[in-house]
Length: 388
Image 1 (cartoon, rainbow, N blue to C red):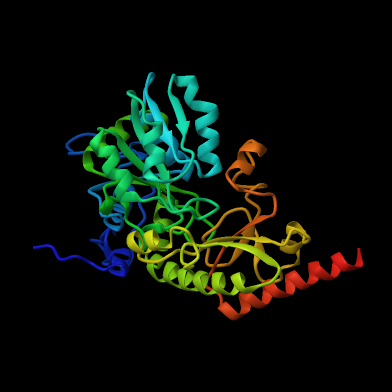
Image 2 (cartoon, rainbow, N blue to C red; image 1 turned 180 degrees about the horizontal axis):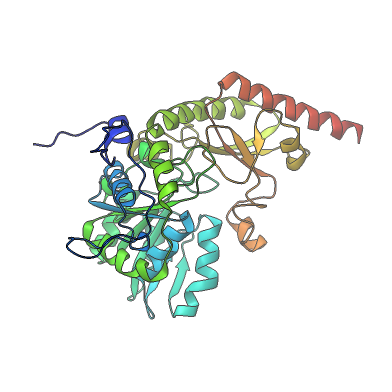
């Protein structure tokens, strides 16, 4: 009888390649791009996503997300695009959540119509918003919760139930939560995507993507993906497996820091808004408590309109202005200039993504050091504003 393993046990042990020869403590790395084809059960090839390291890591991803199977890709966008192309065809329709990662939005608005696939965006992130957009040819519902960058929370159980009642598949970008804080499969979501560049990698040095789903759905994804390429090199696969061993510890520390920082920032007189689901003032706080084990390491905030957001970021001494997120080091960025730069400016504003919005990826540093850095940066910008 299988016993349920805890998150840190899964991170440390599941999906490792056993070193049968030398009994090493870590997975051996198989770098071959060419394998034997005769007298074997499975023909291996990196583009077929079935080298020893690829397969082992996929098992770890599946275990972390409580699914039967998984696949690893060369980037988060590879995971997203491969999934959409595997489950959609000409004449199909997909419903996207309104608040969406900018790269996904760009893919939807510039690529899908080339293949005869129609799409629509919800006006909100409640189940009723999705239901209003469903058409007779709708095949997929795509959600992202917590969303990038405003940390809105979508009711996964409600959306999953709605989709199943209509025979529609559900897909979620679970990057912001990570498997440590949220397991969408437990709420009826069919296909779970990650930019493994983020919390799974966790050290700002790996670019990868991941998909977790049932064996049936991964089989369909595999048959499509071997035609498009997008596999990950085994060296990076090995590095990602190594990084995942500490994901539970890292994300717990980042989540604790983010909650403490959100509470501090909310009290600051020069910060007009803080977006974080762990705050009781967040509109979906109770829902977040229901479907998340922790509230995550991401938050966003807006400075007072009199303060220049770009100058604020340049004034930080410890926290780094940086495009990506989820590393052990704290970083800030402007969504309007990075993750959502490809969106139409008017569409960004409609989603509440203002030019002064700052996305804060909270790291593992001491809470006191982080808040001191923010306070001193605000004071620097204020002093410059007074001089001007």
